[in-house]
Every structure is written in C-alpha cells, then in structure tokens.
Length: 98
Image (cartoon, rainbow, N blue to C red):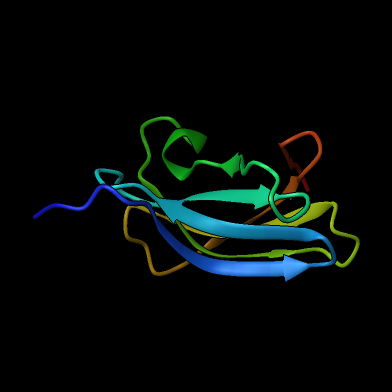
C-alpha cells in the first residue's frame, strides 16, 4: 500500500523559528519550510527543483543564523558530491549574493 503522508526531516529550532525539510510522496527531493512560532502554518522557503531552471538540486543541510533572519542552505546539483552554500534572507525569501 502506498502512503501519501509527507515525510519530515532535519527539524531545527532557533529561538522561536522552526525549520524542517518536507517531502511529499511523488516529490524527487524535499523542500525547506519554516514556522515563525509553533502552531503557525508552514511557509515554503526553498524549493531546490525550481531554484535553478534545468538543474536537479537537492538540499544537503541548512541552519539558521544566530539572529534568526537568515538561513544558510547547502545544496548539491545533479548528484554532485560538492555542495554549494547560499544564504537566504527569510523575510524577503531571496538569496543574498556575495
């Protein structure tokens, strides 16, 4: 029997913010979501398959900054062993360019 329940992993809490990776049946890779406070609706922060058009990316790791305003995301492309690190501004949901 096939289960359609989402799979949650990499649950992290810093201050009041909670981030997690969620993968729904049929998805190739998980997406990163966060909650501002417990019991608030989860908000999508990063979808690796739509981040770079034509590339298959997968989130390897992620962690909040100490001020809870940014999320450091390590992802790989097309099964690469070397991860790319990006910084996401949580409030604007934009990747910061270094």
